[in-house]
Length: 479
Image 1 (cartoon, one colour):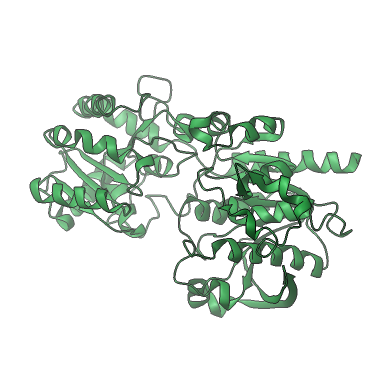
Image 2 (cartoon, rainbow, N blue to C red; image 1 turned 180 degrees about the vertical axis):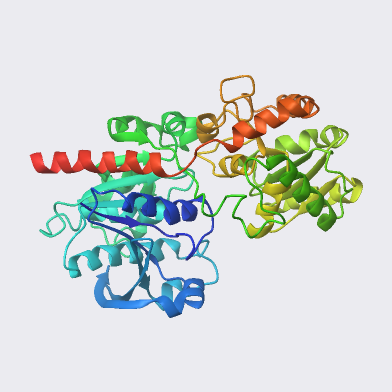
């Protein structure tokens, strides 16, 4: 069985968020399965990827094709890593940009990419048994296989999986570009049209043989309007082919024992002294009062409404009146960036680090005692799992994948604290509960040891996806 992952990003080649982390780790885990004969990942060749990995790129082929009325083409390159073939679609016009996304022509860019993927499959020696697409940027690969390319014999046996990493971003466009940009005839309008516009996520949900999300709880939440951003009825109609598969984390990247980015690597056995040393080093670097006994709370996230920033700002004066230090790392909406920078001027026990910095984030995980993640919605979340791997205790809202991964204090194998309502003072109450437990060093160390033993490896996720692929293959053989 051969699987082709289609993605707009993958670690380490190009990453803007959780999708890139997943696509850097999941294919590697799946490639270990004896049931697979091949595993490939295909993504755009961005400017940054060429600059950082150009010496490793091996030319595979050139392809030419039409995108609507325009004749165009692409070059395909390859890098082999961890038994996975990473394929890159090169086109300087579409992908020589400073940013991965956020361009005015994103719809056209990813229509080109999706077409290039299908045309490459036609050109190549053999087609994959399963095409696994991810989020709206690759939705057209699934749609094209069931529409404009459905009569192509080489493609007719490919089964498709479409993973929704975050349904908030759906790929919505004006109906007038159906033919010119997306190269779809009017007969396929009903496949992609929803609520008066083109909706690529809706089209992929309809066309895919199986749909997955990044946690079981999120799969259930998507049946409700609050979480599905208008697509609840489409999800409900397709729920017989929907499954939530919990994401994992790559422990080769997030292990305090082998992490070269933190001040002092430490083992599970040495977590107490290791974290104390890292805390003092961080306090020194950030200009905080040096005291390893002072509880250190952190947030690492986009500064946006969905991450619960509004809740934090509601209670931050009360929070900073507690005996703790608080550091936030992230970029986002200007109103939140300004609010945190102003707070830093007023409070010696608060630091606002308004930037995206992966190395610094790992120093924070290693040094901190408490990790705040009060999200309004969270499809899966990786940060709470990373926090656990460093022995940092998450405080999360019981939503999406946070509900699936964090077991509340007082329960069996507890690894964090959980609150239910999207309410600022319920968050404050939970922080105070955590601080009370922190004062009891024996209880706190027991909780830390339980958290650091949490297993969020990709092995279980890989097994579930291979099971999905096998089910599709069994169905194909019966056809």
